[in-house]
Image (cartoon, rainbow, N blue to C red; front, side, top):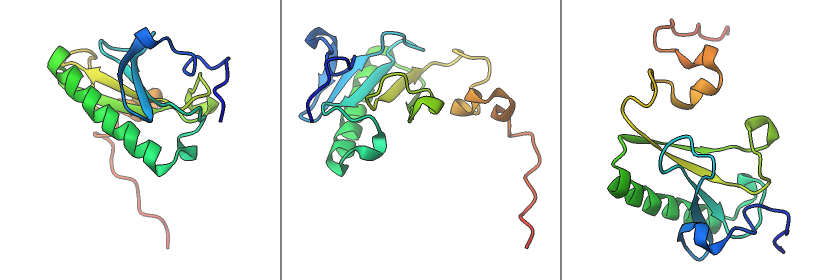
Length: 137
């Protein structure tokens, strides 16, 4: 598939590349949510994670692990969030699949428990709630 000239990721400047493999590219997010926030994308223009080949998915994971090691050495974060925004309703703003690797640091938020559940704040705090009732038979 040809790379569309309108895709921000397909037209990424070489200088922005943080690390790369044959099938994937990693670069720092222009609007980072934390220091070191990095995106991992396939070189091939693909909108959905579910349209990737198994080889592309595996390659992205290998590159993500390599980038995690570099960020761990460079920034010494206490943890990471890993995420993919799949579709407009889930927050995807560029029509090219991207995996977010977000370094997390102790104290960067008041309450880190719940992680990505905070996209729905009323559902983020679940650890004090009683367990749901089992479904009726």
